[in-house]
Length: 370
Image 1 (spheres, rainbow, N blue to C red):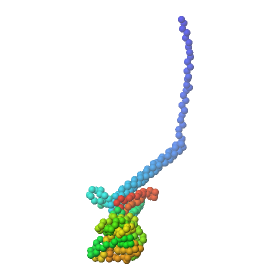
Image 2 (image 1 turned 90 degrees about the vertical axis):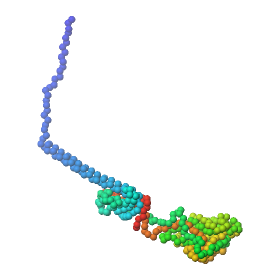
Image 3 (image 1 turned 180 degrees about the horizontal axis):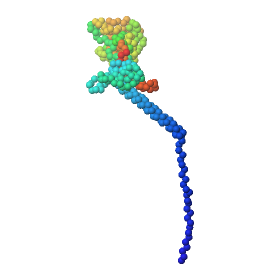
Image 4 (image 1 turned 180 degrees about the vertical axis):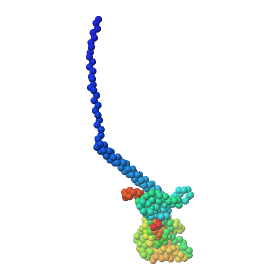
């Protein structure tokens, strides 16, 4: 068997000879221009780095100062809130005591002070320790104080005896029988401390007994204003009811409570008027005293025989047995004040917009001078 051979010619791609292109070099002009541009870029970059560094340093310093300012205000407000007493309070300085901090059992003094010169430090001192700069540089530090004028005297729920007359030495106790036509009255003006601004009557105590004939009597005990002659006027400030059935057959104290006789002028006295308003017979008997060795100052006794239409002349030789209880407010005759709050303004930057402001209430309201 004959083998047939087929010859195939293989196509071969042949590359032409390689041609290398020569890369041209920089000319002298190009080199000079390139160096100039590069120098500008490097200079600008270097300036930027310097500027950024300076700004960063400036901002860091301002931030540190502002942080110190915030910390100082936080410390000062915390101290002021618990202040017990104040030794000095001015526009740029305050010194006061705070609760014991070092365990010696005594209150501790603290002081904050700024000279008022822009750029000076805000200084702090604890007791007698060395003064330290709480904020290194301060542009402004100002303090404003809120105060109130203190008042003294009994509180709203604390009754005190304003005036009384009760069985003075050498006097004679007498009966005054009440009926619809025969009331009695007692003018009184308490001796208040200097500076009293107002007063109130809360309770009146009188010595009385039942008449003994019937038990249907009704007695009104009234507080009225008084005229220049110490006589009752028609102006009734308050009144209370006393029933004959509530009186003993023997003398005893009867208490009458009042709530409307308030904010009274301390220079003007009042009258207690005891008058029978109902009953078929005499409603009761009131005890009074006359010609005691010393009668109570500020008291005058009066009676009427026409249901209070007119009154006898007021006399100081007689006085009802009575007590008046109430309250009064007094402003001391000094210029002392109570510190209730402090406003603080602290500025570390030159711009007014950088001021840090705070207000704090002083819980103990310590006394401060004028």
